[in-house]
Image 1 (cartoon, helix red, strand yellow):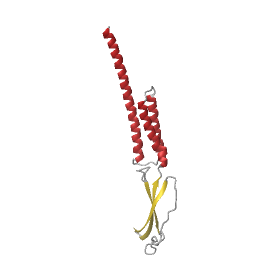
Image 2 (cartoon, rainbow, N blue to C red):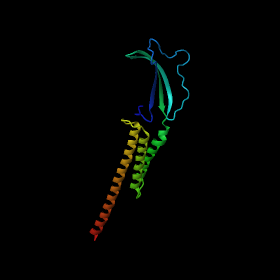
Image 3 (cartoon, rainbow, N blue to C red):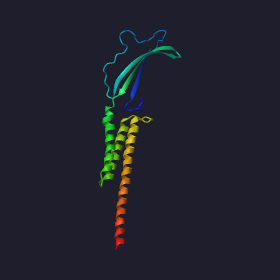
Length: 185
């Protein structure tokens, strides 16, 4: 399986039929080409996939023991991404939007809110990694969740900067009043 485009991926499943004991001189396989189709797909529903297409081919395989006739049927599966939307995309988008909303609100618990938001996105990333098979390449969902995490983390940095600047302005105003009072006396 190639999960690079997960959860919007398509998978190919190639199934071959070949004689074990008879060469192509003795048995030659080929798909029927009459009015009836060689392969008929029924409405098969899998939990994570739907069968989009199937096509058939035949091929001659060459081995040291001789040439063998082989039939192939290739199934094209398309992933149903509804589960991924409900479990990952919608929650992670909601977490990112929540991190923006917390920037507009002034409260004493801003940092606690942002830390909770970072923990929420981290939990989503870890639960996603638990349900996915281990692969050595980056998937589309990895990039999406990484961008979500970076946006939330940058929101935390922006919050820290804004908090620092507010504190700085308060100190400057206090010092200005203090100097104004002392100079006027």
